[in-house]
Every structure is written in C-alpha cells, then in structure tokens.
Image (cartoon, rainbow, N blue to C red; front, side):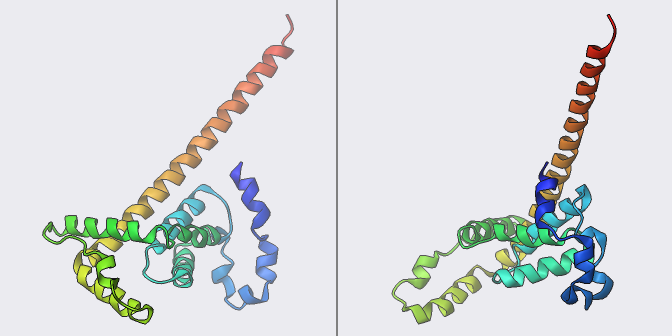
Length: 192
C-alpha cells in the first residue's frame, strides 16, 4: 500500500512536536491532518498542491503558497508541497497556453492568438530576454489573468476527486480481497 511507503519518509508526530523549528509555530504546524496519511488529508494536499503549482513564480514561492494553504485548510503538508513540482520548466509553457485558451473561452474571446515568444526574444541578447519575456506576458494579458486561476481550480478539483475516488476504490478492492480470502479459508476448513 502506498501509505506504508510514505510513512517511511514522513516524520513521526513526536519528532514534529519536539522539533525546535516547528515548535516555534505552536499548534499550527502540529495539527494531525498536516502529517497524517488518510483519504481526505491526502486528497486535500493534492488539491492544494495542484492549485499552488500554477502560482506565478519559482518553486520556493509555490512551496510557500502550498504550505500556507495546507496549514489553512489542514491538509497533508508534505504532499501539498511535493505536488507543486508538476509545474516545472518543461510543463509551464503548455500549462500557461492552456490557461490562456481557457481564459479566452471564459471571456468569450477568440480574436487574439497567443503571440510567439520566439518572435519576442529574436535578436535580443541574454540581458534583454527577461524584459522581452515580461513584454510578451503583458501582451497576452487578460485572458491569461482569468485563465490561470480557472485552470488552477479545475486542476485542484480534478486532483482531489481522482485521489479521493482512487483511495476509495483501493480500500474497497482490498476489503473484497480479504473477504474472498476469508471465505476460501472457511471453505477449506469446513468438515466434509
């Protein structure tokens, strides 16, 4: 079971309470849902991580947002922080393109096409790339501004539902396997 695998890497409740860095935050970081591996806490952690993964900025900013949201919603903190890594340099452009298209759909606009970043960076030196990239972002503007939180909410909801349903399915299947094993054992032990 994945829960047993994760338990090897997660700290125990006693070590969390006794940690001097965590103790300074008092009971906020000692809530049991922040560290437990149960269906609602893990599904909530995935949802928070999916949402925070689309917060503009680098990984430390996303980690901080995921941590604050996990503490606020009292969901699994390590899972929330780890899930933010789905947004990385390889996936950020397709995610932002999907957010742009979703923003266009939400605003009922189809007039503007996504301007090519290659054209914005063409002929520029390395020191000019960052201002050119910001100009490119300003050019796609409002559809991205609307689409990014919408995509984050959709991904968070999808992540929550997938983990919740997957967990329920896993528990149901495990229960059925145990039930079948018990029935087979009883049938084998029954006198003939």
